[in-house]
Length: 95
Image (cartoon, rainbow, N blue to C red; front, side):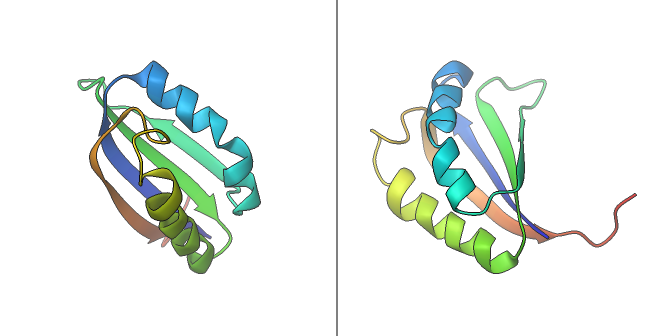
C-alpha cells in the first residue's frame, strides 16, 4: 500500500470540504481505497489529507492528475492557498 500525503493552506474548511466532496467519484475511480482528512489544532487555515492506494504508481498517477486537472485553476481549487506539498509514503511498520 502507498499513501499520498497532501498538505496545504486553505481559505476556510467549509469551502475546502465542499470541493473535496465534489471529487468523491474522481477519487474512487483513481483507486483511492481510504482517506483521512486532518487539521492542526492550532491552524484552521491548514489541511492535511492522506489518500491510500494499492500501489505507489497509482498514488503518483493521482498526484499528477491533481496537479494537471484539479489544482490548475481557482475554479476547481477554490479554497486552495499556494502550492500543495505532496509526498508518497509507504508503510514500514504498522501495529
